Length: 100
Image 1 (tube, rainbow, N blue to C red):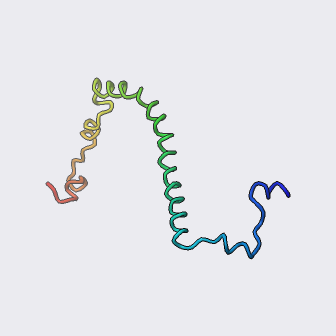
Image 2 (tube, one colour):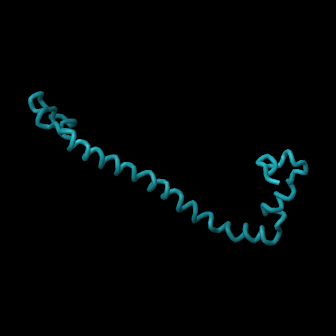
Image 3 (cartoon, rainbow, N blue to C red):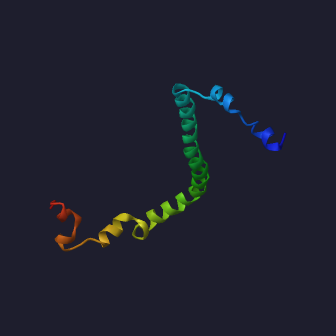
């Protein structure tokens, strides 16, 4: 007996294969559970990466927030929007949508 037979098992004879077959009802339940368990690994893998990275990013919340509060022209979106206002109405998004 070789190592592969010990790990995988001995090959089946043709006459023994029929006893190892399963029907559609049993096959759907067996392979359906396999698919459900495999689908659970994706979100778990994503969270195992996102949680540590999120915890590393927490230390940047206070400095960035203070920079926006102290100097609103350096990071606030309202200052960027006020600098980029289009003076010609044909080019503004509101004029394209019919709003005045």
